[in-house]
Amino acid sequence: MNDLTIAMPKGRIFEEAYELFVEAGFDLPKEINDSRKLIVEAPNENIKFILAKPMDVPVYVEHGVADIGIAGKDVLLEQHRDVHELLDLYISKCYIATAGLPNTQMNEIAPRVATKYPTIATNFYKEKGEQVEIIELNGSIELAPMIGLADRIVDIVSTGQTLKENGLVEYEKIVEISSRLIVNPVSYRVKRERIKEFVAQLKNELHKR
Image 1 (cartoon, rainbow, N blue to C red):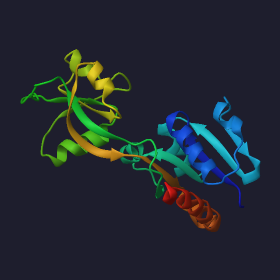
Image 2: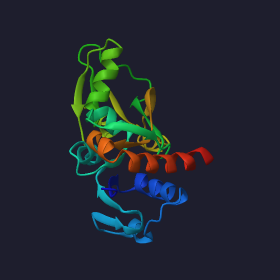
Image 3: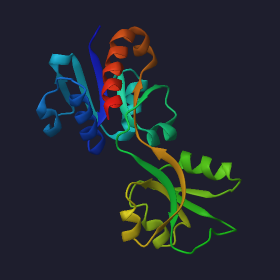
């Protein structure tokens, strides 16, 4: 009953979360970082990691195959999964913004916005009282203004270098993003003490930073 299953995305978030866990005193195998396995055990901590795509982490947590997950706030805002957000880990910081070609206005008749975050983009323009056509793309969002597909894009911005290299400029910042610790509601009831101890250990490390 004290075992924990944690869903984590591979890549930058995983690397920063792994470092946080180790610094917080969790005894994790070093080979987790280099493993090609999708399920990795940390027997000394009674923890099992499911390594998944970022967008899939909240799905695993919502359906209870993982007790806990680490997900970007962008994913949580986009999906609205039935999970509890327990802790801001302050890692993988970035933000979502609108961008487009320099010195260009939105088309007044049929403005179009390309993004892989349709929910976030729709809500943003709705709050501004602007009606736009959302074009959902899964990659190379920067192409859309360059080829005339859209007036603006809504995307993650980290350093702004990708926008700059593609001749785009940022127009409006929408929301700050960082990685959050989420939990399945049933797991939080059934494994409450174990999860509270886990969170407390992480909080203790975060307060040192």
